[in-house]
Structure formats: structure tokens, C-alpha cells
Length: 363
Ligand code: IPM
Ligand code: MG
Image (tube, rainbow, N blue to C red; front, top):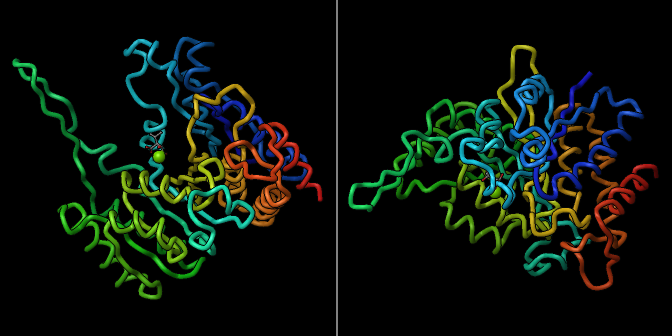
């Protein structure tokens, strides 16, 4: 029995994860061997328990096969005493569960061509997978800090560090993924300037030569890649990159899908002795505090993240495809949340979108 744990979190997290819970329940009622649990997280937990996360929640997070995560981030954090928010909970989870492999698939849906700021002929045919290193690099490198001198001026620093082990395991993720797709990896770095990336590239090239010569490997500098993503996104199959670059490039790539609200992601830890890997599934859009509580958020990114859970954690490819196709059919039918609205579409809220996807699952 798979243990699925919902952490809805902040902002629109609660609204969108309610739809995910209904869809998960639909699959469970039809034989998905899973049980669904939920824990308060972030501001919701603060309001109820006076802490951003209960120690007991942490135990459940560790025991879960998959975490279905909503979003984190809210202006309400400003009112919370600094002592209560010593660390970013999402980053803590990524680090402590060692969720190093972040997969962000981006596909241009023909029905959403007019929701993107890019021209349809630029988007057409895009189907890429961004593989982002998620547990290292500048986000976690030591030493880090801000020092203020006696005269009031200061210096601040972070460390961009990657080891052979860290680079090889994320490169493996990208090469393995490419083998199940169109067989091409584009490694993205900044090896023309930074030592860390010279080492990163050498390590990727050497691993490729030793174990993945059947995969086609190319390289781009990150500045060029950012341009290529809006110039000719269909050229990419798998993009392999480090933590901060992956953060930036994935927002950029999101425009190809029409909206940030459509994009799912999956994060994986190392494979354990039993052959399973801890996983966290989350939409990439974040908490959108400006529209939270109004019932208009797009639940598709979260729902498509659950499809990735069906595929990778539950290993039920047919169910994953069924859910992805249900979402596509609803979108193709002209139903839109406001973020992906276009002339002629029917604008609905979060719950209606969930209802429509549930109905599409039945057919
Ligand atoms: C993402 C987000 C996070 C990140 C934030 C919320 C810490 O932007 O998952 O892309 O920077 O990784
Ligand atoms: Mg981001």
C-alpha cells in the first residue's frame, strides 16, 4: 500500500490540492493501492498549531512514499517571528530527503497556443524534459552568509560547489530519461567562466563516454540556452542543468506550455536497498498569494504532477496517461481557468476544472 501525503501549504495550495485529493480518491476507488493522508504545512500549520510544521508531520514526510506538495510562500510569513522560521521548509525537505533529481516536463499543447506570449509557429512541436539538480549548488553550498563591518558596509557570499558524485547522479538521470525519449541530452552550464562548470562539463562528458555513448550529447552555455528556449524550443529533448540555472530556465520554458499553471514536476531521491525512491510531486507555479482563496487558481499543474506520481511512484503508466489525456481533453474542449483564458474559451474556477477532469476520466 503506497503512502501518499498531501502537504497543501500556502496560498493557492489549499484550493488546488483539494482537486488533487478528489482525483487521487477517484483512482484509489478504482484499484490504485494507495492511502491518502494530509498534514498542515506552512501558514495553515502556523495558524492552527503555532508552528510552521509539527514534528509529527516530519515523521510522516519521512515515512511517505510520495509527497503531493502544493505551494509555499505568503506575505503572512513577515508577521511570523524570525525564530519560528529559521529555515525554508521546502528547501529543508529537498535537502533532508536528498531529492536531487528534479524533472520538469514541458509540452506545447496545441489547444493552448494562444495562451503563450510566443508565436504558435515557435512553440509547435515542443516536448522537452528539464532535468534540474535540486539538492546542491548555490542553494546549499557552504560557506554562505552576510557579514557587516563596523563601518556598516558589508559583504555577502554563497558557494557554488559540486562534487563528482553529485554531477554523475544527476547526469545519469538525464541520460536514462533520454533513452526513454528521443535519445538527446543538452547539457547546460557556464563552463566558459566558472571552474565549477568546467568540472561539471568534464564530468558529464566523461560519464557519457564511459556509459552513455548511445545518447547524443550536446552543450550550451546558460545564456544561450535561455535565448534558444524562446527562439526554437522544439530543438530540445532533455536539458540537463544545475540547481539555480534549472530554476531560471524552467520558468522561461513555462511560457512554451502557455502558462506556469500547467506545469508539473517530480523530484526524486536516491534509489534505496528495496529499489524504491522517495518522491515529491509539485506544480512549479508557486503559491500565487494575489489570487489565493478566490477559487480561480489553475489546478492542472498539480493534477498533472499527480499523473507523474501515478507513473513514477505507483508505476501505473496506463493510469498516468489516462489522467494526462483527461486534462488535455478538457483543455481542448475550451474550458479555461483565467490564467490560460483566450478569446472564445469558457472561463471556470478551480472546482469546475476539477469536476470537468473527473468527468473526462469517466469517458
Ligand atoms: C522552484 C521554486 C523554488 C526554487 C523556491 C520556492 C524556493 O522557485 O521550485 O522553482 O527556487 O527552487
Ligand atoms: Mg522556480
